[in-house]
Length: 106
Image (cartoon, rainbow, N blue to C red; front, side, top):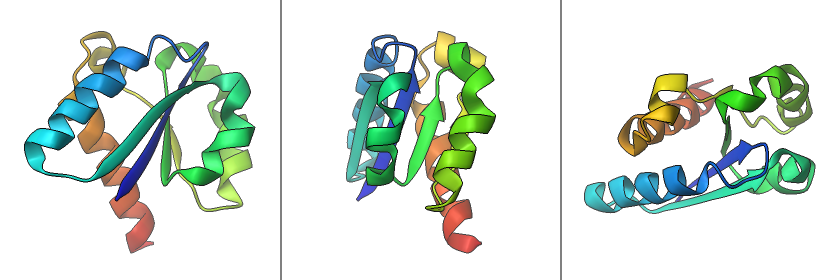
């Protein structure tokens, strides 16, 4: 099972994107767990996931959050602004799966 965490300012703007990603995963027959949290919950939650994707509105936090997660080998990346804005669940899911695959290959 793939475990993907989305993180944004309040955890609300990513909830629709989570739904779209889950729908896409279902179409593909993929077992996934995808959840959205606020940036304030990052430290308490990230260790339960294989990858963390940040909403573009908190990209300024990338270096700090990536450094926190690096100790556990969990990649942290910013979601493409167009994919986020257009709610392209398929593209964001592909991005998350690629980061997980790249982590496994390292």
